[in-house]
Length: 594
Image (cartoon, rainbow, N blue to C red):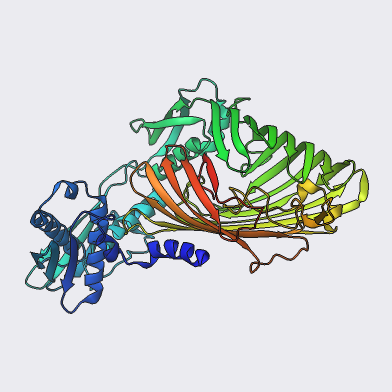
């Protein structure tokens, strides 16, 4: 029953239509409304949706208290929307009853395009493939502007105009419900690029940035290429602002100057967090993003809590051997004191990341880990010298890595291990993580549905032959909230002094299954809330099973900063185990759970 109730809370946020939500005072203080268009359901639904979007982003409406003032203001918005779809003779009336507004629309005829002409020099017109609209099409603003964009794109890619200025004029013929559409390209000289210079640098190597520009003297001049070059400089994370200065034409050439302002290259970070099962923790980090003047980044970070202490250093080298490739080298010291094992380790390694496309990245690396692991149920400790060659592939279409609202990710990692001290110790660790985000922007509080699925398998050795710190565990803030960290999974039977048996501490497993579902709401620019359900488990056998999960659910608050949300979650175990699980768990940290 508790499981069903938790799922119901999240489903409720997304199952109700926006009109129902707006009828709830908690969700909206504006009067409810309905748009009526006789004989045209598609236009009616479109006007309804567009007016809802305008409501959400309007600061003017928030100042009105009388529903009639709201109706008069929105009646003007409806007229503009109708004109954007070609309804120039539309009549909109409104009525207010019981604090509910009804808009009745008589759209009249939809104006069509009678003729299209393009005022463009013949030398530029040659090769133009045409417009995305034609005679007889509706006179819709989106299509007309699409024609402007098509001409601009063609000129930027096929001409060397100093300025690309495309305008349009629509001449309305009311007696025919038609319009004559004319596009005009303003006169501008064609020029080539002369000298290219960068001003404002103090610590960044100029040649490093020049390679990013991909603009050299003699190139065909293009404002589009200048914008692309500016974006590439900003993506180095070394530049905070860029202005482009173009000289007056001389002898068919223009000089281009990029005036830049360097970003501060050093950052000092301090973080605090709290998990019920792990206690309070602190993290500190220092970062230099231009250590050798060509965008090389060094990061040093330390994290300390009662059960784990780490010190990590990483050097990232951009454009390693080729422009679309980065090299990251790291060294990490770690000490863990878990319920079932303690582990001390030193890890060194390097990984090459290659950008395959805008959203796809592949990685290949080598890693050597020296560790000493002692398990509670075994005598003595084991020493390992694990050499691995991690291979990864990631797809990422999200809009924000720390607070995604749309898009998805898919990350697959294959990590083969061999123990240099005992070459018979070989195993393969495979992990797959999928996430998805969908935001209903037309609804109040921008509800976002977020999903995460994780599965892992280790093959090659049985459970007790694997190092305890390399096995899979479930439970905790980044796994199944409501249960203590690494508390889910196989547990051995331990004999008590009186001869009875009880479950021992979790020993980890060779397989992992996790699934999380979150409903996120934004109440203001700085505050949000979350309802969530997590499920997961670890297994002794390498067979992930999504039907044998432990479930937890809870509620959270988000304080949204300019960097990332600060989260506070309270979670409850829905499959509480006597003498093993607490009534609830608390999590405080920076960034969303996933």
